[in-house]
Image 1 (cartoon, rainbow, N blue to C red):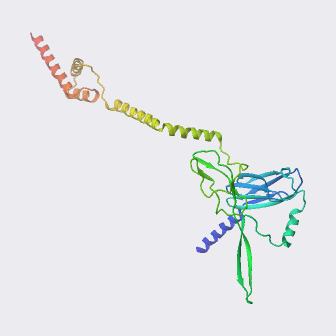
Image 2 (tube, one colour):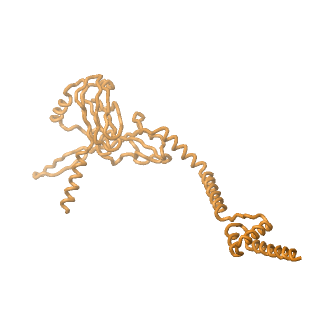
Length: 314
């Protein structure tokens, strides 16, 4: 079982390595005035693509997400020679090269690199030295270069849903993110650390839909300024509904409007053969008359009947 799990882990790890970001061009040699199309594939998150001329100066910057194509017009820069395209993504950094009015410059550069001694460290890199002794008592050393990150970020995008975003890229393309600035913050939050080396107005921030931002800001401001009034109105509406329901279902309704009418109604029910108990039950369940008023009506009816009986016998 452990061997199977180990195999699965190694398979997933190898798959993730295969799916690393790739940068490619349809050809390597271009003339002035041509359009260079660079394909960025298997990129996770926002990818920042920068074009560097033979002198190492940035001549164009593009950004997008996922797999896409970055276009560059060779008329954008007058220098001839080998250009470098570097793409920085969340899952890694990749680059490719192309030549402008210098056919075969990439092959020539590779051949020169194989016979040229290592270059001295430049700005933005640090040298790490190690030393060790030999059997004859002599000592020697070897040196390597450690890439120093230098992050450039766009200005913050407009506030949307309480958040602001920006894009950043490492000018040295170190492939590490130890000092990478935050790409998101709250609209009222100060810039979090670490801070970028510089802010570039040429690097466009992430696109924010104007209508969505305006609608969100309007709703947020409306709630912030009038939330107590809104809650008060809602509470009043709920209370009014509860009162109406109580009146409708629990407050009994009176059918008769005075004792005389009640007496006449009781007289009619008695003539139809309805018992006193049934009459009282009907009045309690379907009218608003109290027991005291019902008793008063029965007593009054009894007196009236006695008087009518005496008058008839006389």
